Length: 242
Length: 357
Image (tube, rainbow over all chains, first blue to last red; front, side):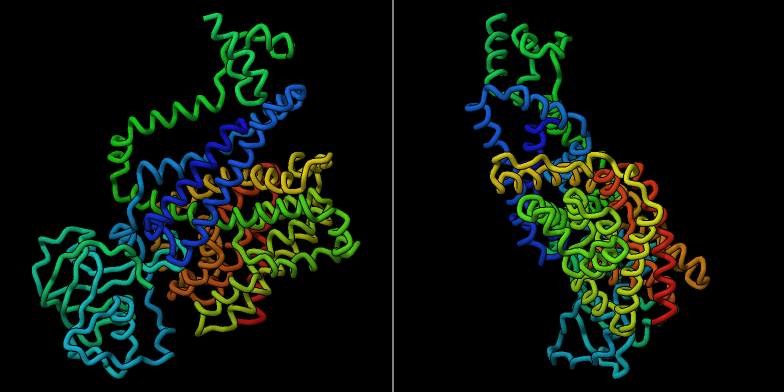
């Protein structure tokens, strides 16, 4: 591939990273903490390309005599085809803009991101509000490993998306620790309402109570959640939890 | 028509390397007799334009074609792997460019023990200093080779750096709060892998397995400023390695949706099978070495040993890394290096597990 094409690809790829980082869409793919890195990376790519383009233009104006040397260089660069692959993420970001992971990923994995190790730190008392907003991860952890039963008889509000597997309807979130490739689900089985109108991946706020002791090793620590009210919402900007 | 051609021809002479290949006219043939076929050459620049236009025109069709849940998931994972890895690759090529421009080969020779067999463990421990994931270490290792560092030494740096640096060890400690011995076990397993591979290369490795282009010395800086060397080296490494990184991302995304997760659950009980399956999973999932501990800890159905194997194999050999190595050092190299690393990493992880777990 020729130098000029490589530089254009670099500008496009750097632009794609900047677009992701500045528009907030990067949260679909990576952790929030990566944002400054993405901006820096995009800027470095564009700078390297612009520097090289500027050098080529200057060399073209001033050094007509070393035509042969440059032609040789261009010819040599022509052998490599791998830089074409750089076009794939560019097209994916600008044209397709893949969505955040959702129900499909949850149903692909039996892993449970809620970890027993969190329990060893002890559980802070819940606020005394009538309805306690909780992350699904904390909801699962407390149901499974908090022996003091801090969730029993408490009304909680969970936010997540709807996942259907066989005849069961779950409320789920995905957690990522670096990027979407390592996403692991946390989920709770919803009962007590008619969920027929809720499609997969519909984001909801669900208010209700846990069925005490419903998260056990046998059901891979998926608690049962008796829902009293459902409120469809628009997806949050950062769909991942934790 | 002939007038336009004439203009193109002289422009091509004026701006060498930019449009000199667009048309081959009599004038150009005169100055370069080797290129005889007098036909219009299609260069990558035109191909790129056509691809972009076609992609734009068929955007709606593309989007609807990818509208199946599996493909949506795969494309998200693909973009995620690329977006997450590119900052590390850029860090790697900047370091590589800096070595090329500012660190003379003699300095490196002075820093490392003269005997290669001794320099190998030194390079392994030096990996602590490069806090990045595996994408960063490939261009750096290649630059070290070009600056005259023995391949065995550069290779053990390549294997050690992504696995033994402080960030990876801290994230392992955070993930495995209940099993703190995973941290020294991982450190030992990865360091062993790097050092053994280095020594194996000293004993059996052949320089001709590595593509000639990876070892070729940079031309002497005849008056070019150091910053130009820095920028050009970094740019060239980025373009070359970036393509292969993207290729690795394609494989990782495909395996992410194709490998059934139930494997792990069902095979968890059998320790031998568990070790093998986890080693293979580490290769195909191509997780970032700073995140794999969190994935390993969530596979709570498995005993610790297979999960340790997962953590030691992952940073040493995975599809993303194999693609990068094939691109940087040549296919012949990757075809030999990757399988041996795979076996050595499993053995090292088992040895480290025997000590600590």
